[in-house]
Amino acid sequence: LFPYTTLFRSHEEIFSWYDSLDVYIQPSFQEGLCRSIIEAMSRALPVTCSHVGGNPELVTPDMIFHAGNVKQIAAKMEMMLDPAVREREARKSFTKAHEFSKDILDRRRGEFYSEFTGVKK
Image (cartoon, rainbow, N blue to C red; front, side, top):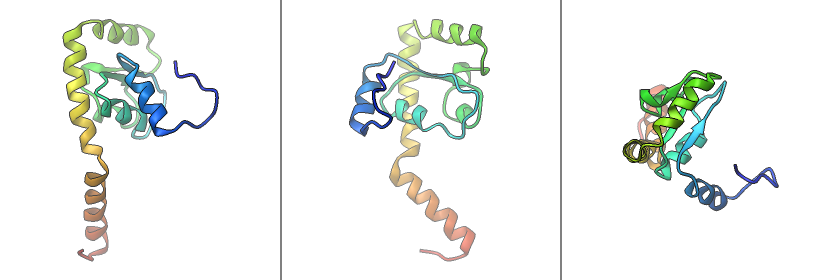
């Protein structure tokens, strides 16, 4: 677990922590579009997470579990013991995370605002 001695950590500390992990598990009961999942994916971590909020659009369907279902969480953790699964999911994570790069998000926001306001850049 991340040693929380203070509430805030630098980006370098967070990414260093992600780099120390083998897998990332997000067992949330509620989410929007989980930034920590995207951050973990950007570090090529295989991710498994609960089926809440925007999580399902981030990870592959077989890496999703129902919130609070400990048996499903354990089954996903067991799947992650297979190096082939970890490698496959790490590659998918890294690729998916690029969809959320600043340049891509800025372009999408600009397109949305242009369409919404009718003003083209």
